Amino acid sequence: MSRIVDIRRETPLVKTFVLDCAIDAEPGQFILLWLPGVDEKPMSIAGMNPLTVSVARVGPMTIALHELHVGDVVGWRGPFGNPFRLEPERRALLVAGGYGSAPLYVLAQYALARGIDVTVAIGARVADELLYADKFEALGVPLLLSTNDGSRGVPGFVTDAIRQHFIEPLSHERTSSAASATDARSLHNVTVYACGPERMLVALHTLCRQYGWNGQLSVERYMKCGFGICGQCALDDILVCMDGPVLTLDQLDGKKDFGHWHRGPTGRRMPI
Ligand SMILES: Cc1cc2nc3c(=O)[nH]c(=O)nc-3n(C[C@H](O)[C@H](O)[C@H](O)COP(=O)(O)OP(=O)(O)OC[C@H]3O[C@@H](n4cnc5c(N)ncnc54)[C@H](O)[C@@H]3O)c2cc1C
Ligand code: FES
Image 1 (tube, rainbow, N blue to C red):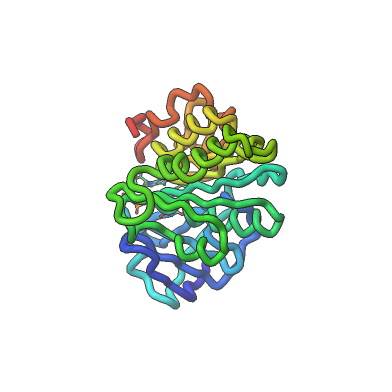
Image 2: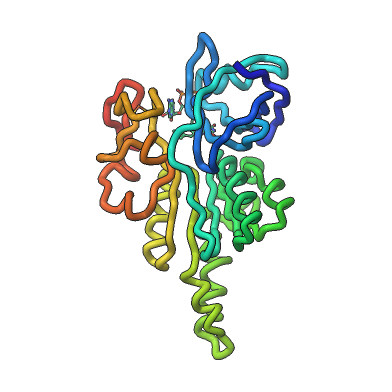
């Protein structure tokens, strides 16, 4: 069991919980967080030392967690799953939706420490749900923001912000007479690392294929055991808890469940 040493309100929906312990993990891995007498649920690692999670208040377990105070204790096990694998020769475009900012913030720090050129794009429904925008700003990386209602950043989806600010200027440079070979190459020399709603991941998968980018997408499924026993987290023939949550474009190519089906608490297949 670990004690909560700090709780921060990030957005109207999300609080960050800092525990009095550390974890030896890699960016993109997750833990199973346990509230005795309530439930145990998967949460991405938002910080390793001290162990930190950022949690959206959506249902019974997360509502109970949000009611805890500094000094209360929680249980956890992990780390689980396959992490993001940095590709040092390629520009990194980190794309977050919802609480996806949390694991990508850890990844951004790792990438910058390795001298990788990082751009971050965050999408949300409204401005005050843009999670970790201030933290990414403090890292000094280019930050593309989008909101569905246009209250901050580009109106629409995060992929609209990426097209507007990332792809279109590079395309113009490429076709202008002053374009250098480096500019032209940089449009293709990109790896997308993404975590967020599955609809966003599907759109990014398409975008990556369109521009010849590499992609590593962190996919969510309802999880129980976390280590390949129960089959609850199946996505076609993939067990997301073991083979994912971070999956490559190739791993997701042609998967019928991706963007369409998941399994609910009883294991029944349900539309996403
Ligand atoms: C790999 C992974 C990492 C995650 N990281 C985070 C994170 O960093 N922050 C965060 O706020 N949430 C994260 N989640 C989602 C989080 O696990 C659910 O929001 C949480 O389980 C909701 O539980 P609840 O009892 O509050 O709500 P419920 O009413 O039980 O569920 C609300 C929603 O969460 C989903 N969910 C419920 N139980 C599970 C489960 N056991 N496994 C997966 N999804 C579930 C449901 O499908 C539903 O859409 C992650 C999920 C996965 C699979
Ligand atoms: S959660 Fe049990 S097999 Fe993945």
